[in-house]
Image (cartoon, rainbow, N blue to C red; front, side, top):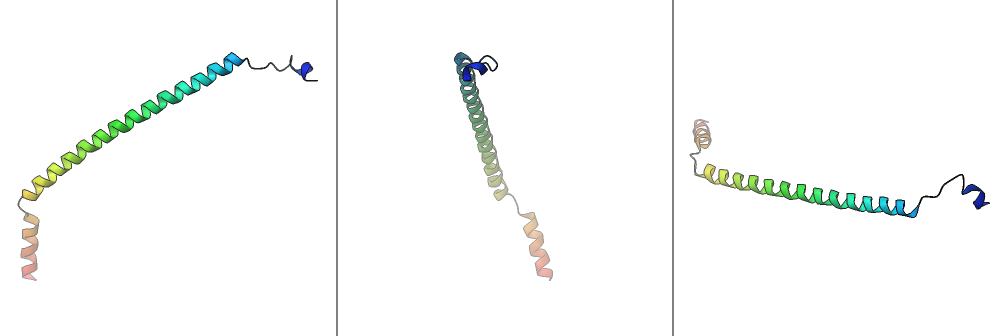
Length: 78
């Protein structure tokens, strides 16, 4: 019985399956490389932004606290 249907439904050739399997592995590998590079770039940008914020914080801590001066004046009136 299986021999009758083998002519109607062709079996996939083994080399084609291997080609698609190697394509899938290659695609998955390059996708992983792309994702890791994107994550590395994100981490570098985040680190640069964090350093910039640290520098701004240090600069702001040395600035005159004008808002605090107004709050002290406001609290003294009350």
